[in-house]
Amino acid sequence: GAVVSQHPSRVICKSGTSVKIECRSLDFQATTMFWYRQFPKQSLMLMATSNEGSKATYEQGVEKDKFLINHASLTLSTLTVTSAHPEDSSFYICSAGARSNYGYTFGSGTRLTVV
Amino acid sequence: AQTVTQSQPEMSVQEAETVTLSCTYDTSENNYYLFWYKQPPSRQMILVIRQEAYKQQNATENRFSVNFQKAAKSFSLKISDSQLGDTAMYFCAFIHSGGSNYKLTFGKGTLLTVNP
Image (cartoon, rainbow over all chains, first blue to last red; front, side, top):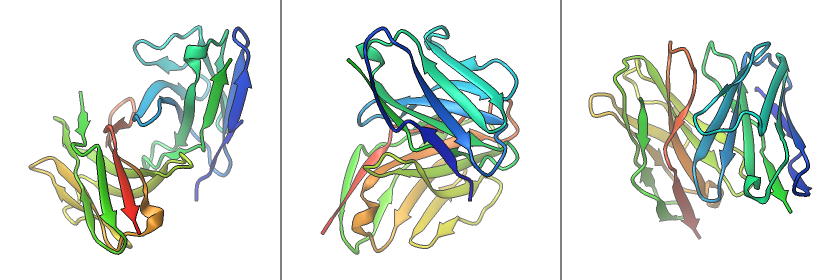
């Protein structure tokens, strides 16, 4: 089945630094990748949609300059949290899939802690 | 805009028993997919079951089955012979097929605990 690899699984960074999270589709080409943020005991909140070779589409209220998304190939999308602050601490999840069957597969998530 | 409502924040069931999780949705679209995802303590999102709206037959995957009532816009998940490993957060989700954004809309989730 389709596999999406997300790294790192956990990261701790200092306030003011930037952190990059990678999401790779291992055995299929992902035309679309999604980035979510999840707070404890809450649902997934969509941050942005990235399409290969084009700019990401951000959801309302998500800061484009803080959460930089790059989808340079059909197998890799990255989320960079720039100038991280403690309030950016959260669980970030990516998902990828082919539009043909709406079979979206999720990465294992990244727990970001900003100290 | 589509909305997905899960009215049961938490539920519990005894091992080997059957439990039903509720989900309702609101849409003006006629073509769409519905999903149940499971998120265990590891937080990995796992697809449990999928239903195409144009199919009248309810989807089934081993111990998991759905009751899809299109007119009522209801999509409940039944878990039979509950196992300890079924303990997880369960999310109902909707996607409009043929739309331009391909975004999943999630419910708020139901935390299911299976007790030994």
